[in-house]
View 1 (spheres, rainbow over the protein chains, first blue to last red):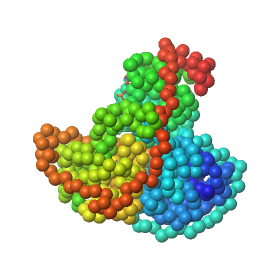
View 2: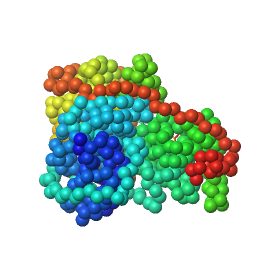
View 3: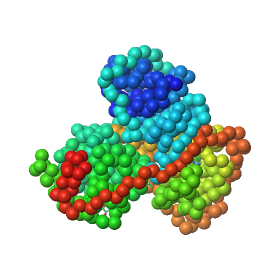
View 4: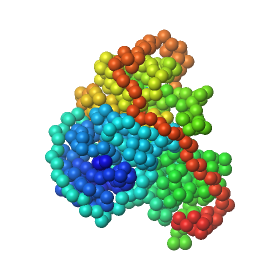
Length: 313
Length: 249
Ligand SMILES: Cc1cc2nc3c(=O)[nH]c(=O)nc-3n(C[C@H](O)[C@H](O)[C@H](O)COP(=O)(O)OP(=O)(O)OC[C@H]3O[C@@H](n4cnc5c(N)ncnc54)[C@H](O)[C@@H]3O)c2cc1C
Ligand SMILES: Nc1ncnc2c1ncn2[C@@H]1O[C@H](COP(=O)(O)O)[C@@H](O)[C@H]1O
């Protein structure tokens, strides 16, 4: 059994999500390689050699992969697929974009967002917005899959000593090109790897009011998330969305403010260790999953919480 | 330019599904079924392209059991021009769907195929990418905006870090995210009109596609339920609990 993990990176560092995919690959029980395609002067590839449990890092360093499109990454992956029994990526928008395209060209099914490895060909994954957990077995020779980041520990990013092997780029398909990005970025921790997440919903009422959430997040060192309703209303950008069709998070503490608790939202956060809900409607379904519920108007409760935490620290 | 739209019949998003006691699957008998919400957005986008003169015809395709026709009628009532139903009772997995859609696309020669990013039953998020691969076309996934630039299409994509833009050669495949548009409701007159719009019938055999599932579901179980916790009376009590009991702050 040999597995290849497609690395996600910003041409400097590996994305933390990739470390979780490495753990899933290791759970398959064989050797694990990482493919780093980018233009990084080997920075990202060198970082990958230090990840524990990795046998080889395959580095394809070329301007063509500085901002690679799925079409060209898949053309590259295709040339390597025959060497592997399994090809994995984290279930991020990057992995979800690339892996099904690869699977189709290999004429194999793809397994999306696996949460457990039960055997070399058997995996667990959620369906129906997290309301059913399916155990599925594939009959395909090459297993292509994406990995739910919160379901696997991160492989340690230091201490490994993988071999670095360089490969040449393959010609671009010419089908698509990257044309730019608007990243809001910021100083806050990244949503999917944060220890604490504070999320706001439609109850926030406006984007200005979201500052109440940000102030609480700041004292807690937390990332900020949102429900779909808050994103649709334009209170916060799309990358804040937690849920079935947004990001999946499982922090130590998740604070849901002015969020009713629709199944699509719960699908993205119900594996959090501790859940706090602040909502003025005591019947809100979010209280059915909350460890601690506070029935209160968020506009008084959240600033009071922020102040009390500030004083205590 | 012809636009092809893939519309899937799924359990309505408001239904709280139940796992069957024998662990073989999810109970879908007597459950409300609807068009996959992302596919409503896909269909809406195609109709808007026609209304703005960029598309000439909108063809909705649904694959699966006989009742997919209801989903196609909904697509037609929203404004699609005609439907194609590929009928089979075999469980269709994304690779098989992509192969069938490829065969339909080769017959219909659309300039653009629009799908949802994700079906809310299997939560796969695969079919559009697979279809693009099999056609050898570019893909614009998780789209929140489409803009034609000459003979190319610029797609704004919702990604984990924000928004990203890619420029695609046409023909292309697009999968849509939630913010691409707000789908319209079908008006009563349009629901009536839709009854007279044509729906073609095909089978996987007609299209020469083997739809045998590659994945076997061994077991379906209900995930561990979270216990509801306690209500706290005040902000102070909440902080006490988080510090003393939960030890998370
Ligand atoms: C295909 C599809 C995909 C979806 N994907 C997602 C997803 O990924 N993530 C997601 O979140 N949703 C998703 N949804 C939407 C989901 O169904 C709900 O509509 C959404 O989660 C509701 O957001 P909300 O809880 O913020 O709003 P609401 O349901 O309107 O709830 C607002 C809450 O705020 C409370 N409130 C209002 N004012 C105050 C106040 N002053 N103080 C305290 N509380 C207050 C109210 O009591 C209420 O409970 C999806 C839906 C579909 C159809
Ligand atoms: N049986 C089907 N009939 C029509 N369209 C489908 C079908 N299955 C998947 N699709 C399309 O593919 C998209 C993604 O589905 P999936 O890859 O299963 O998450 C859906 O939003 C539909 O547009």
